[in-house]
Length: 440
Image 1 (cartoon, rainbow, N blue to C red):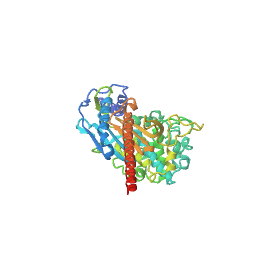
Image 2: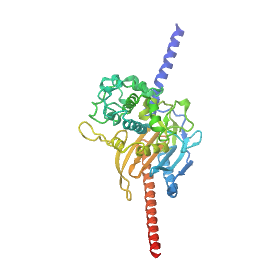
Image 3: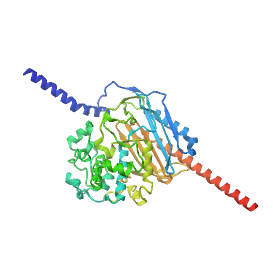
Image 4: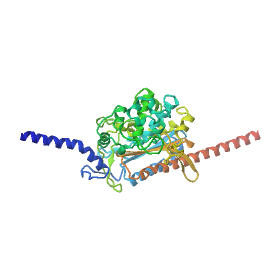
């Protein structure tokens, strides 16, 4: 009897540890409970860097660009930072500074993959746009026309447009009222290869409001959208995004993050830190983000993200009407534009880029993931795309993302100066030819 009691106690202790340990780690990484004191690493002062120029017009500013990145990495105490720039519809520069993996002393390279968090929504938006263009899905056909609508009666009147623009009323992760699903969102220790299995983690959760009444950012809404895309497209979400987006745009370094025992060799290590002002970090715990794939589960590189941005402004990939639809900030039922100016999978604003450039339209999407941050912005007027990634997190997102506008200004000014010089040389050449012709 005594042995049975002892066994039961041991079993309860082990079961409690397995059940509660992921929850403790979840709150520790939020800074709500103490983090274990071991396994910390110091970011070295000296760090490797790389700079790759693909267009001779920008050779003169490449050093300035990499110095900006290096200084920014130091200022935010990130182990690594990586960026890519496209101008006039083509990649012109990529660069990075720091360490993809501190313990292995592995430098960041153009091939280093990062978790891109909610920048995954721009991928899903691009897939949705392609399917809309091909008349395979309608933005305003409600879910009651799909079997998906049967999972929750409250979802029946929701449309793909509302899911993609965060006006459907679905909660974000912590707002999930389904307790088992909420626990799994904290534990992050299970693989979900089927989208519908992930949807069932929140299919009994209550709506925050009636569809279209308000705006409330929801990655769960994007996951539900991916299930609607599957049903309308007749294939799995993963197959569709490969066929419709990744392969046509040659995004060979973009994929769902594999399980921890199958990590790609180029995947960065991701880091947590208690104090952003100090170069002291520890590896983020192993997590599985497959339950949020369409809304935050992809890994990629800045160069691949730039390809995505360029694809969205390529008329052969997406026509003008489709692009205009997806980059129009969405209105609520009362006719007002939502306060984030969120369009269909993108935020769309006008930014003042300063003297000589002026105000430009900017479509963008940021991403915050476990030990990683991502930023992609597209400036269609200059056929420009800028992507930046790091392998840690800043408390204020723009403390990380602000370097993107510095880089954009640098390359836009160089592009405009190059165009001005080319125009002047052409004009001079025409004058000389005119003089020569008259002399004859």
